[in-house]
Image (cartoon, rainbow, N blue to C red; front, side):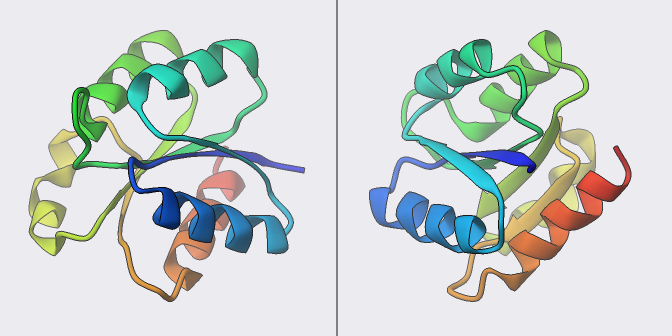
Length: 119
């Protein structure tokens, strides 16, 4: 079973994504900020994919992804955001994929599945 870490400062978003991914058969852990996410990764080396919001207080998703790349270069990272204008900039960021958040989580699930295939 593949493990996914969801990082988002909005509880309702974390819960929605977590529940949907669990229904799809993933083992999911959620964190509300970068500090908790890094602690989770330190304690669970088996996490395959990190899905992180870009816009978060304190440490944003870009900074978190950069730190994850330094510590865990083989982990897959997906940026989640409500702002589609980031897509043109994503190629220079430390992520493997980018998904615009919506109530339909099909794209998130498909992106996770595709990244797991190329591991």
